[in-house]
Length: 199
Image (tube, rainbow, N blue to C red):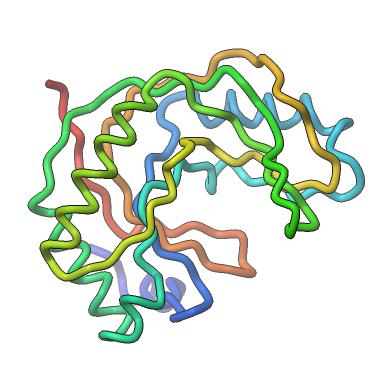
């Protein structure tokens, strides 16, 4: 159980500011391997790139901190409902792998996301998202799909990197995580996780 002192240090998600989303997170040595790739591209990322710390690496699935939910109820109630829905959700573990890196060229963003692009496991991620989205909807929770092109962001930078082959980053996804991203604090708080057991 979380101590009272720990609760005081854990901020409540701020509606319209912070992000709360379901995600997969690196397991085993995958996080360290991704950071090694991030470091190898530093000379190409230009002046003062934002580097995602290992503790914040993730593969986004579904965002629940959206206006459709916030106009209906408090952020805390939405999170509680999402947790209850996820308690009833079931899916098995699967392999995910990333062997390509590139920059997403979003024209409106001054700094472009530099990401590892998922190869292995893409279909399983899309199927998981579809099933979880339905589970949330049945509980009255809206969600935005963030996994149309499954990826893991390593940095944000002015310079863009073309599609490049990299050393394989691979892990077995064994848990689904509800993440609170504290905007402005470069911190991810894992609100709860659910096992994805072997088939």
